Image (cartoon, rainbow, N blue to C red; front, side, top):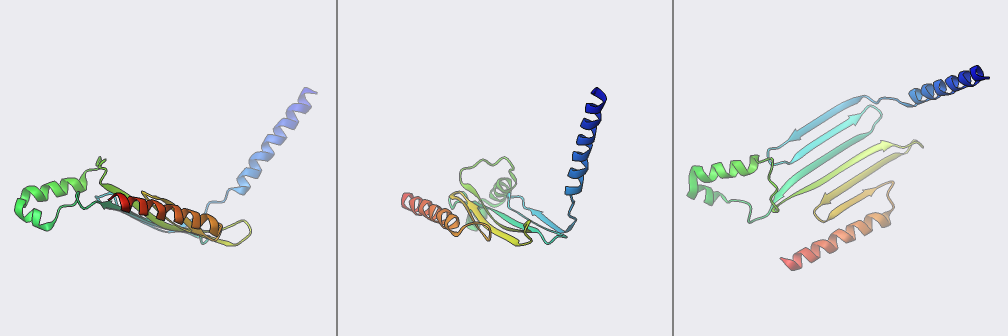
Length: 157
């Protein structure tokens, strides 16, 4: 009886492993680009052989009181230029005057063979996705929430 149970257990676990291996299909990447800037801004894109793709851009925005003008650099010459270079190269810049704005798009073929495409924008006010698989009501609600935050922020400034 023990041998029968052991044989049955080995057959079952072996069958699961084969099934899992058959479901896993690696998709070759046919195009890949990436760029990272010193200020933290970035861009990347890739495309798979199955038609899937993704692109994303992240832009670091600095508020007006954090930015230095060209006139300031002329007045302070090399000292100001060095300070600006230091600000732009500082990876540990936790300054409240910087914000990351991200936008992107991705696409893939779903299990029914239909193309799904989603574009998105994300910033300090929130995340707004718009896509073929996202109900319009959800995208509209997210967009309205972001616009409401922007209006409130404008009143405080």
